[in-house]
Amino acid sequence: MPDDRWFRHRNADTEVGDAAREWLREAACVGEDPELFFPPTERETDPQVAQARAVCRRCRVMLACRSWAVEQGEDTGIWGATTAGQRRAISRETRSRTYRRAAPRPGP
Image (cartoon, rainbow, N blue to C red):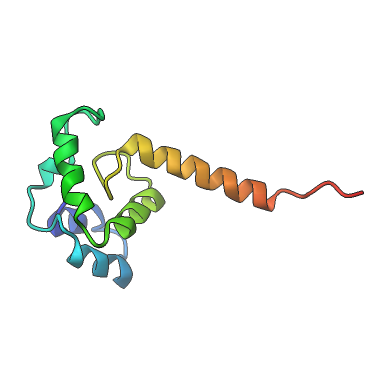
């Protein structure tokens, strides 16, 4: 998760809700080098990925960060200790569960 400067730049033309700002202020990554969270590759074995995840895992707002990244469709970087591929899988699973709940059930 990048620092507040990146967040403001990324969302310069959109209104960011107070809830998003609140978790951002409490994030363990604030003050860390934003480049740490954007490794050249997001392979599970990459030491930079492990280092970024270590910061995330000590963060008290990790789940809020992850949820925001999934909702926003963040397709790069480590957010809430997840890679872009992991967030895509979470998003697919969420859509699948929503579809299954919304699908009409066959009647008698």
